[in-house]
Length: 416
Image (tube, rainbow, N blue to C red; front, side, top):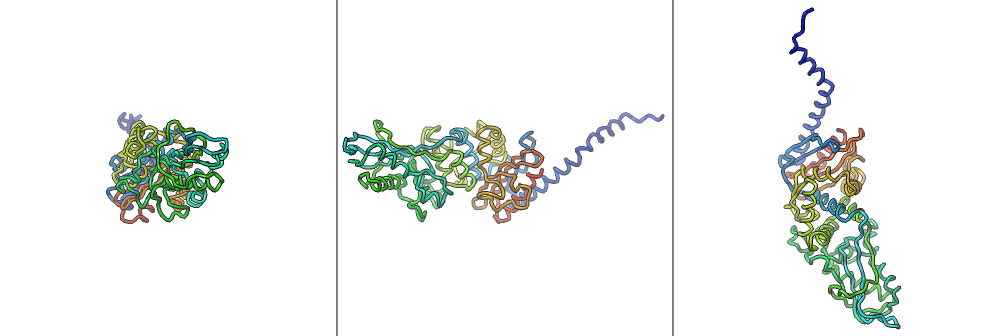
């Protein structure tokens, strides 16, 4: 029998062993090439992409993934992930009424009332939040029956508004820290998302004073006489709490922030992070807390606000995917995933990804600025795999085209 050279046998063995995997590898490479082509078609050569298998950490597709680009509203992924992790999903923000002085036998409070803000972005009246926030809100007016239950029927002083948990910068860097056209004025005692009335026709000059004035009017309407003139003042340390309302659970605040890309809520949350974990109720202090959190999870970013309105807020697809993968199996991560918009069903992606594998299988966060369009999140494939992806398009000339190509990339991710 003729002997087959051992080298030939070895080559055959290698080839035979590789055949079962070659078609899959080739298909994967073809899919990645398609995703890269769509990335460039939608966002130009300044764009980046990363797709990773969450279970194995294997990179499925990448293109310029390490370069930082404007985050736009993908910044909210970092803000809300930090908030869920630091506060916990069940956390509720408190707004309190405290009293000074003494209560007489005749129901007269010889002192004043202090409406102390806790940084709740949802504080308002049902007339506003039922119309503009799908019923998600904290009812300021629920303080009135609590105050009445103490026996107070008249107040010799007045209602003071305490917004000192935050600084008094009304906006972020994008607007020179003044109130912008994109978000209402930020305040430690926010009210109706910064609007001047339930019709949301314009912003309030001072949300804290408007909240105190609304409370004062409601008290008088309930038979508790109090001076209609309100003022700003910090709550005295000797004051006694007599009423409190608490926000919806933090996970619900995060859900509204991410699903509808609510800039006001995001900026309030980053100041809240600063107030509790950064030493000051400021955007800058909150941004440092977010950057530290990202670093703890093997990620990173340059954070300058909570919403992504400011173009200098930047991260790379690698950093976004690193954050999403690191927290995915934590309690905060599980909440974050459920609080992102479901493709084709909710919020900013309600009318997107129809007819693709991403429909109903990807939870995503969008991001849009002039020339910028981003989409990042998780896809849950039919075979049980979880994929994490980040698309950062930084050279967008046609937003409709960018969305079209992103949606097809997400569909490819969901079918991988």
